[in-house]
Image (cartoon, rainbow, N blue to C red; front, side, top):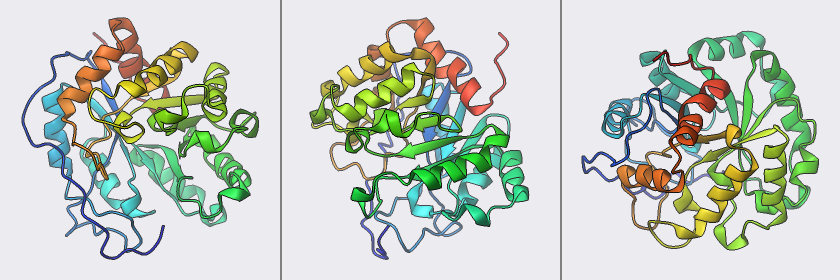
Length: 303
């Protein structure tokens, strides 16, 4: 990222206290949320492209109560770079109900097993790699670096979560063939709806899904389509990933919805949209409970 000490302030999440109409299953997991701040305690990196308002653990716990969601996966936001302290502090407060996806130094040789062991003990189960902000797209994916990282984390059973626009990589399935660990793609693969579901990169993502080589986060539809709720342009992408492999899908709120430049959606409405798009209650349970237990090492819920 570029150095932006006065990066623009993001919109804050909608503060209205309102629960969704849908009732989620017991043990439901929000698989994509960020803790930001308090900035006075966990200052943001000078090199950042936005500045979020404080979105603290206390705020997020209130949100989960409002939505009727029991567990969560906290993903390291880019505003903190590889400083995972805010996320780790939140994990420490909720060791049974929270898991984490960390960001680490690009130099894999700097890692020592003890550091990875400490992250694992804290609840980290994956590493996030930002491919969106790669300076030279013509160089292609940094596949060798990703493979080296994958080999280091493989003994821990972790995955690599990729923030990338899959439409920029038409050979996606070939590049990640026989990758050492599971891959998780955020925001339906982060390909704008205008590219369509027949885009080669998105089709490559579907191939990886079908072959049990990848997972997809059903998150942030507002990030990759024009217009506001109900984000109808994104419905074909929702249906395509379900058709490809419903056992490799997870859902997330994407709270606190950083860098949203259109109307800020209310989280209750986003939950109800998911319910409208995934009508079958057994499928919702798979996406919200069963699949996250496998991917993030949560204990099964005994009813």
